[in-house]
Length: 400
Image 1 (cartoon, rainbow, N blue to C red):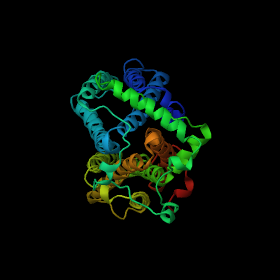
Image 2 (image 1 turned 90 degrees about the vertical axis):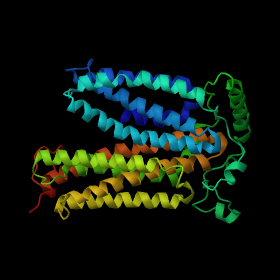
Image 3 (image 1 turned 90 degrees about the horizontal axis):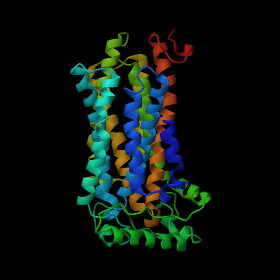
Image 4 (image 1 turned 60 degrees about the vertical axis):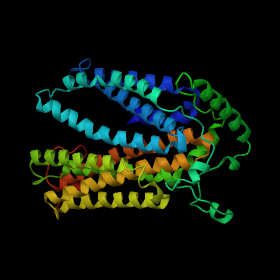
């Protein structure tokens, strides 16, 4: 997580100085290096394999934050592009599980062999991206909001002066930073010229250059908390469930095979739920608000508490509980797709790409905290159920 978190944390300070082509080319190289180092190249060498994992983390962060920012450049503030990206990432989770299990069933269970097979993905990504770019309309800094305001799927609402000053008002505006407004528009016009020049070539435009100081960028990042906070919260809950609680559940929990089976099935259903909700980005957006996002995040936290309590006391030890694993995926996927759609719609045009990159930081920071929580949650549940192998000692969780 650390390399990816570092990439996303630093992105607001250099993304507008590095083109999308360069960033995605680097992500492709890192993807290939990750499979090679974690697989055949690093076979028998844990240090090299860890380096491969670090490359994977950096590649994922670089690709996600860059493509989310690029998606926001498409018409209607990236409504269709953000929804399509979210759906694709949802499918990636299902595909990853299916790929590993399929190869295992074929007798190719070794990590080195599976990583070598996955090494076909980087060139496939590069070729498909280049081909699809020729079919897609050139991204632009979409300034005309008339089409958006007439679209029933838009979430933007008119606000009077009193409402806009409330805590639930729209995100930071250019008017709140008058000292930087002239520079922003100057650089955005330059970016639009790049777009116009790229129409015939179908190449990626340069990112909008934002002339903000470090303090102004941090101020803008904090202003996104009504949405990024919900994304962070839902990531903490769902990944703590996966890394901590679900690893200590099974029917019966005393059998290692039963725990492995529960973890596999629970994650399958979770990924299916994520795919379903992330694919709904174009259908339910009109009903989603920041308040509803936080309701989803709260519900996810309550599911974490419920699963942990159930793994401790075994009140609901039957296969029917798998339904709730699917619901966990629904909540997580919904907050992701609708959260980023809200950011793209409510951020000022010149700051939209910056806002999307900042929003993606909430995902990795949530994963980092959840991994730390998961260590202690799993250890506590192992102690309560008299299971050996806990990473950290938690004697006070032992049942008397």
